[in-house]
Image (cartoon, each protein chain N blue to C red):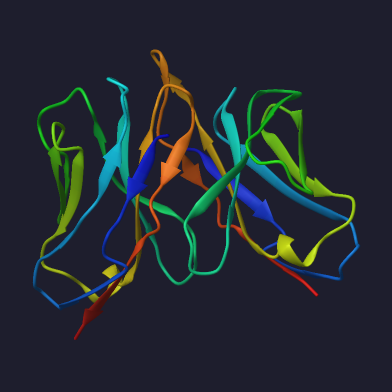
Amino acid sequence: SQTIHQWPATLVQPVGSPLSLECTVEGTSNPNLYWYRQAAGRGLQLLFYSVGIGQISSEVPQNLSASRPQDRQFILSSKKLLLSDSGFYLCAWSRMTGAMWETQYFGPGTRLLVL
Amino acid sequence: AQTVTQSQPEMSVQEAETVTLSCTYDTSESNYYLFWYKQPPSRQMILVIRQEAYKQQNATENRFSVNFQKAAKSFSLKISDSQLGDTAMYFCASLYNNNDMRFGAGTRLTVKP
């Protein structure tokens, strides 16, 4: 069966500090990978998705970047955090069946608080 | 733009009763998926049920079922025999060919003992 991991679970960082959040998937190969952000009491906003190693698509221009150094590893980074980067970050994976990418399965998430 | 609308910010139901959560979507695509996700206080997103647009039969998963009205672009979730563990945020979502999943704003469901 497939499993998706995220770490850290919780992070408190000062404004201007760097950020690195990691997501890994087990039990599948060539997954599509996604980073979402959820502000308090709100829905999910897609930040980045990747269809393969080194391939990143950005949905929202912002202070964040993403990288995919390995097939099942997806990293969300920032060089200098802003207060507005606070939120709940979710990683997800999906696979392709036929002509469409299918159900997205989510990791446990990372709570980020920027002070 | 493809949008998903959940018009009920909050709902409550008595334990063991039935509740229906509403969702409408807007798309010009012919092939797509629709989902309901549950987000309990732990905040992990858990898939509840999914529906392929080309299937006329409504999806069911144990106590959860959907009423998919393609012409009306409506996708409601019915929870039967509600349990305390069903208390959570519920998000409706749509997925189209462009690999972009859109989420509604969510409905907070409280199951009362």
